[in-house]
Image 1 (cartoon, rainbow, N blue to C red):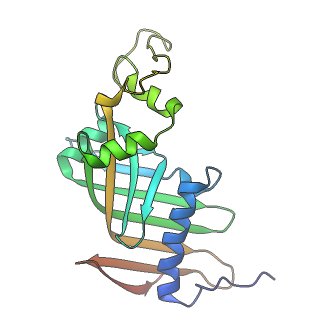
Image 2: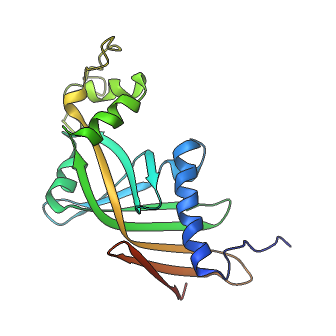
Length: 198
């Protein structure tokens, strides 16, 4: 029988493992934590869900960053509500993470400039797509992607870096010997946690 993970009965260790796995997701594109599901709510109150790519994690600040097109529904929904949630499940390690918090879009500031500078050229091209994401098309191929921009600016006006600052983290580890679930809340930069029934 496999050994139980070190965080199994360690509340602080469980939270640290959540942040460790998120940070690992930034660096490892094969990790389930690289592509979490992002949840928002539209103007009519309907839930919206899609996959994003995790680009940065700052465990000490309780924040993470992903990118999107500022013309997209998700960018508008985040700008309107200022809230978002992420969900990741790793079937191999039986670990689920849910994160909720304040989301702030960055378009024309130092955060966006730094994120844009760190983006690969093949990623930057996506922000130059015409027409805007979500636009109805007559055929599936009735859109245009620009070629790579030698000046690396094409699409910059559509680029949005979103910083999500966590206020709640819910972790669930599944094991036949007994599941473990913990809920953590952050207020004023201080995390408190409690075990919860799975």
